[in-house]
Image (cartoon, rainbow, N blue to C red; front, side, top):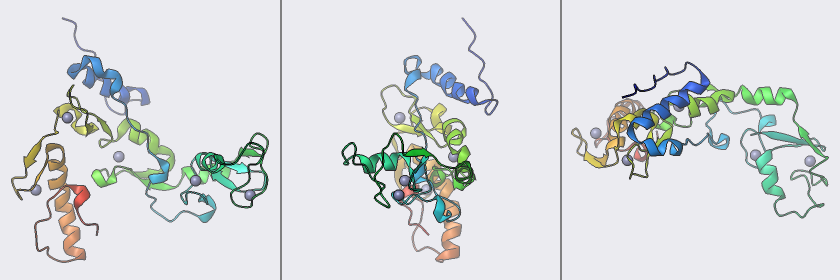
Length: 230
Ligand SMILES: [Zn+2]
Ligand SMILES: [Zn+2]
Ligand SMILES: [Zn+2]
Ligand SMILES: [Zn+2]
Ligand SMILES: [Zn+2]
């Protein structure tokens, strides 16, 4: 019997972290290696630690630019926002969404100045999975690698062959956690995959609740996304 391929240590290189998923997947489901796809982060949904400089904010989506382009009139937009705005404008009649200057998309768009790219890269963001418990906070330039390679909370497809649901990377090796259980402490019913998160986060949440609101009238242990925000 051939010995299994060694599992690379996490963070040893960019390439090996993907291999961690593949090796783990191969043990459980030889036929589904290719289906363990992760969603890259949507930059438009990121939470920024500080209010970004208004010069870095797209006037279409009101978020800091994602892959920005500059029009000859001097206005900047996210590539996707611009393409979306131009969808309904016929060829030869495209205009700048801000100043309405006539634009030839082939000649009149160019990359934004390097300083803008650098300022966007350096904006500090939270991990998109912060509500699930990830405490990662870093420069935006690193968020893609964090989510795709390192974040324990990135969703992957459940290891069980007939289950089509998703599970956090960190729980992948535990097998299918998509069944209902009742929390021993508070007797709230929830999916097994949420129970650990619920009880862990509830303790932190409870402290914040007491500080901000006062002692709670009812137990607060429930799935994270149903807790009232403080
Ligand atoms: Zn935009
Ligand atoms: Zn313009
Ligand atoms: Zn994360
Ligand atoms: Zn499952
Ligand atoms: Zn509980």
